[in-house]
Image 1 (cartoon, rainbow, N blue to C red):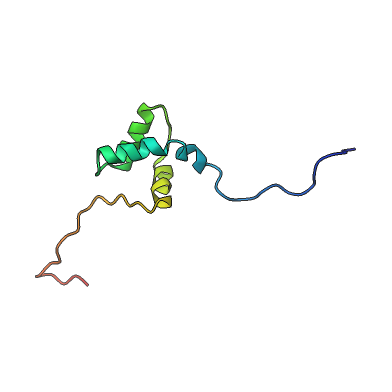
Image 2 (cartoon, one colour):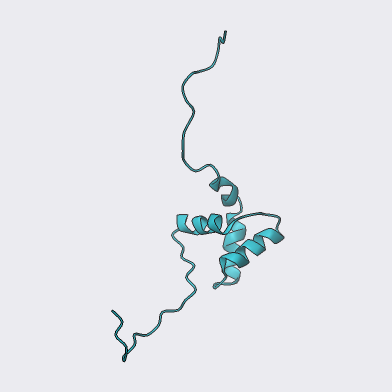
Length: 85
């Protein structure tokens, strides 16, 4: 028979893994500062050189939490001859 402890359930759901990538935030942001048009794959490779394993989705969520976008395509001018809508 147990004398100590609780039968209440533990915490459910939530983010359990972001702390691992957040520990390397300074390195990730430094990579972005060094090359402003860096891709997620290049960031992943830079982290791998430092011995950190991170997936593309993990990196995407890292930037999403900071409201940072990584769009690669420049804006294009609207076509004058073709209908666009």
